[in-house]
Image (cartoon, rainbow, N blue to C red; front, side):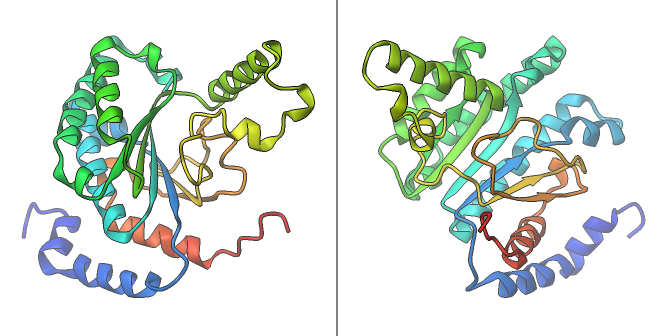
Length: 264
């Protein structure tokens, strides 16, 4: 098997499948996270270490995301939120941003026609300042949201042109307008009202139970600042394109082994 990576050897010999089966048996019947959020990090470094064009990192990352959503549906994870593009990321080179937008448009078209999305009644929604995106991408996101807005079995959220501080500012502005127009009194402002004005207001459970970040970085980078107050965090030392189902299962196992007291 000269020239074949260790990962491929394990796949060919069935070791991964055996380990996957073992992990499934360990997490089965225990408290599963209802809402998993993921920071998809490491696409560029994955490509760089393989001396591939940066575009290949984003292409492979998009394929991994398709598989990830399928795994979550198989496991019955009701809500999935993924951090694809931050407002800060928009400052990257024109070539890279255009490639990210191209990959996104290609995958969004696939989602619109994907029978699994409609069979499982997955509501898809974009979170962020969408006005910063190209018109063609905004149109696709709007079409996808309209096509799935009646679904409520599962939720798939795409954080694009997203910033946690921006989200809080936008919610604050909406509430300030309500006060200015006399629709509410300042004394009526509470956590529940604030949550109802965040980008995640459509979700039955806006707060992620588990947040996963790949690439070895151990920070949230502004992701779901308000909603993540009591989320369990799992940082993985692998790049997003290399993320496997066993990595998801191990993260869920870590989540199940933690004692969640929510400050009590």
